[in-house]
Image (cartoon, rainbow, N blue to C red; front, top):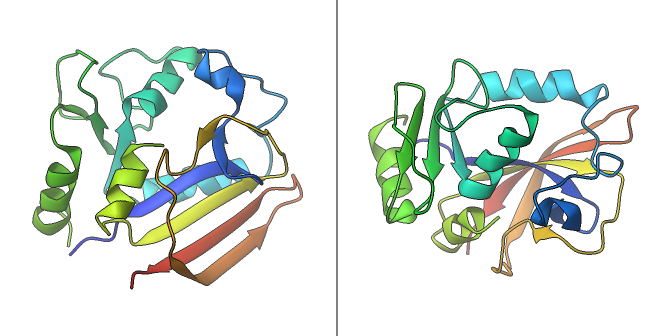
Length: 176
């Protein structure tokens, strides 16, 4: 079965975006969009067979000029989960409406040996967490697992420190 990795930027207080992002704006002074961690992130992304995104994460790219139906990362299959977005699926970007958990369960078995992440965690579908921990506290915003408040054991498998202050931690999830 394929490994599902939740690879996400997060604040020290475990938010994946600041409160400004909830209004469709972004305060670039909080999360680090530049620095020595960025090339590693882009290289990591190229190792994945596909990218799974919820609507809000996908729409974040619109702030940087992306259009509906365009991939956020060139050369990687994108699955976008939304019941409200509307665009024509194509070879690079597939819009998935309906039961995301069932689709992802099938995807893990079939293809490659915020709320979406929480739903997947509840179903024990996420195998690994890769957190790009930004050296900021945002106080409020979008929680890493949406409304889900998980209890789980993690095993640290890698840690990298960048001069930008970002820490990249990789954890294997140990479901009980």
